[in-house]
Length: 178
Image (cartoon, rainbow, N blue to C red; front, side, top):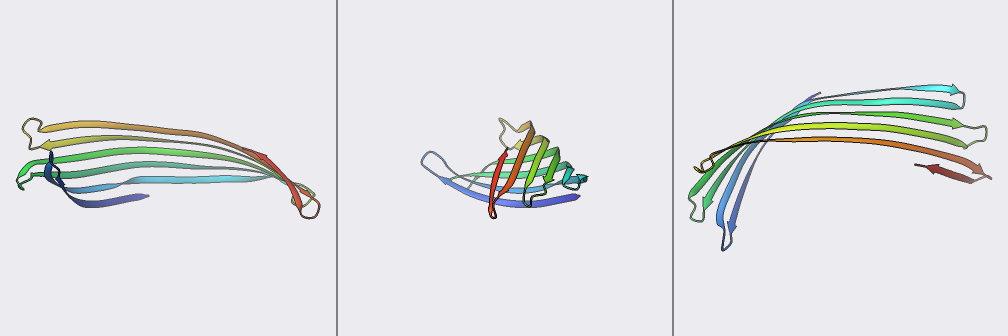
């Protein structure tokens, strides 16, 4: 689906210490959003009347386009405007994730006796690139351009098995591994 999240903010700070005395105000606007899609599917296979195998998957893709603008106004202790900084940021964010599941289930003639095995593999990738452009009224450093990148990935495997065996009328033995 498509989503957009616009917003704005204001911050006013006063610093009044012996070595640093100034006031700063920040005006900000931002818009976050983009596209994301999910696809899920699965199949349940009955191998025998008491044994089943389930396979399922979930796939996700997202692409975000975000921007923000912040204006910083700094004042000295007498209230005189000393510096104006405008900072713009644009960010492109592309991510995807996949999850695969395999579930085995076996029941027995004896009520409440059960054997299960589950396996899960998942991974996700997230790549962000941001361009930051800053214009300052400071004559010594009026313009700054920065580019940041953040690439993340996560891979995981999970294996689990459980066995339940009834003992007597109300007892049971349980064991498993993960």
